[in-house]
Length: 189
Image 1 (cartoon, rainbow, N blue to C red):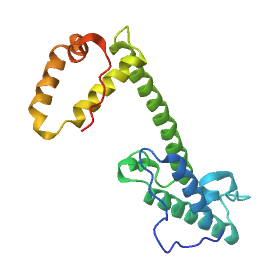
Image 2 (image 1 turned 180 degrees about the vertical axis):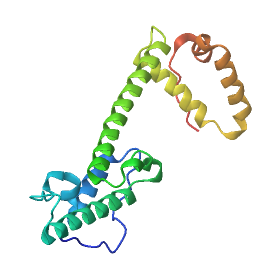
Image 3 (image 1 turned 30 degrees about the vertical axis):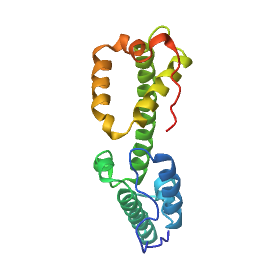
């Protein structure tokens, strides 16, 4: 098995918390260009000697080449992982197959975790909004926020007071800020 020695650092971003999909595609392609993908993806491609206790010179050379490729693949994977992620593969850093599978497994866990967090956030949102919540009431709230945001800096004290008032009178604030229930119209300057 012949390998190509890389002359530069890998030409794609290292594996972080949120880029497994693109990283895995890039890393696979990169390992293929170095002829190291087989030792990462197909451990059954390794030479199985006829008699493991009595290797021929040719078999010994092939086993050494395979182990060297495994080391190179492991090293390339290690160098293509951000430091914060290396803790997950530190104990298996000499086995590219186990490293690859562990990193893939972590992606599945993080995706499931993200989905659970989104579900939890949506449940919290539904619990927190008023029972009579509508898109129209959201539009009114957004209009009020836009108007407040558009106020010049000389109104900062007023804005601070308004925020404090809203925090103290959560349920009452919408009525107090919008007497008569009419939608505020933007003011032109």
